[in-house]
Length: 99
Image (cartoon, rainbow, N blue to C red; front, side, top):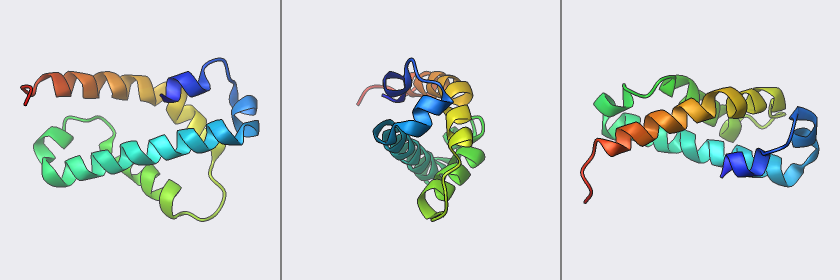
């Protein structure tokens, strides 16, 4: 979903488009909350997620920091870290049997 929203944008366009920016920030908060939940419920699996602590910390900053959101930090996360994170999570999910 984030990739579809940000396709073809650069940082300047991302910063200008409040709808896209808000959607991306919301999705990053959801990802961070899900990984925070995983950390509490299944620490062994959570330990296999690279940068989990940084992702959860970013979620906390996005949710609780009532100042300005650092668009450059968000943009960097979307463009350099989200793809590898998605690939790792898909691989981990593939290890669990369908229920």
